[in-house]
Image 1: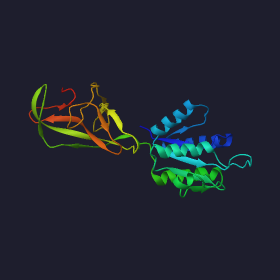
Image 2: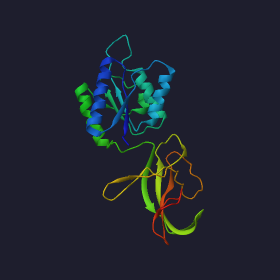
Image 3: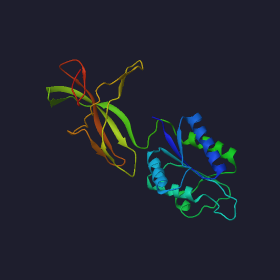
Image 4: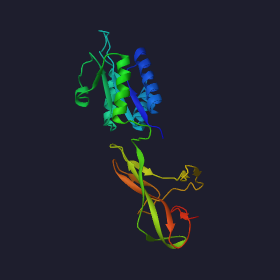
Length: 248
């Protein structure tokens, strides 16, 4: 899993070049992927940007100054992206504004105190400092995350193989999105990692069972969590078992 940053900036040539340098910095220094929305021509492009915002983990807003007196002093579309980001639930965002850009309209309510910069070199330096300060990293996800695995008290469990005294390990799956539920979520065990770090692929692709319910799908509400049964150990026999498809 690699964290991804949605970079919101202008569409002018110099602004694009700077944004590409920012993407390179984020990758080299923090192993973070980036999304840059440069081609905006149709409704399809707008919907694509909305989807990319929902899938991104971090949001970086850059408000460049434009000196053309016949044009707006900043990028209107960047401000619209900021409104979309606010709508899909981004709360911890990094915002920078070039000296001379007015703090007007929607920005007054969303960006109470953006970081200011003079030129490209100062912008790159401040982004590196702020990303480090905020702790942005490639292991973070704004969507579904596995938070912890812990054993449960021993219990009698019945299924098609009979009744067993077993101890089940639960994994807590959290939905970090504040704006949308994770509908019909399923879990699959991809691999088992030994204590020496060697990963063994799991041949069983069956869905794992959600704890305290009979189904294999679950809706996790915004900022809520659900527990899934990862594996079980029987008191009367050796082996590690799955509550989705029992077998040693």
